[in-house]
Length: 260
Image (cartoon, rainbow, N blue to C red):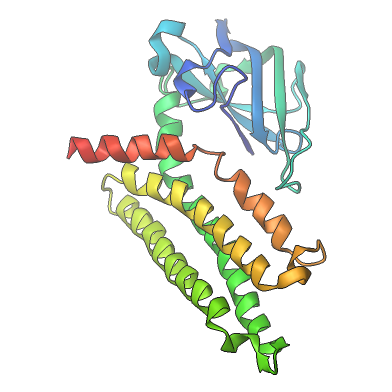
């Protein structure tokens, strides 16, 4: 399943989407383009967000549809990305695609609210995903420091190498607990918009910095593609963009803090 929300005319401003879903009897006719969609050319079905109201209605005029990707009128492309190549990313084109009205998810005009609620959940999961990459890199690097020697000592004897890793180990543990806290708030039915946003901007950035430090700790061997650090850096870097940029996340945090 892929989530088809972003369009060429806007990513962060999701409420401005232009893709049309017009009623025709007991079907909707979908026309438009989605872009930067993860698994665009692999998904069997897509959750597609399209405008059933006017452009001026913005968020209140968006509905969600479950769309089989083998319907006539759907075509896809795949981007040549730096990272996350196993998942892939691309565009989806809809040319008079007929979707039964029964495939609409929820009430008409409520799709934007649905996806925003989903983001508050997925942002914590993205945080944990990135932190898992960071922790794996730290585990490998701690081990490396006990195996590699320089000047007659293990690299673990040099604080210039161990202290940066110790700092990052602290940050990773704190960020992981922050993700768990957001998920706990969700389980308790409490507001967690700000906490979810914190997870999304901090964890991918932290993971990138951690992997970079682990690469440097491996010296010239870390720079090669035979070790996983370069690929990991590219993968987590992409997650600083998808599901909301750091700037949008900080806007959400600031808004929530000002409300309370």
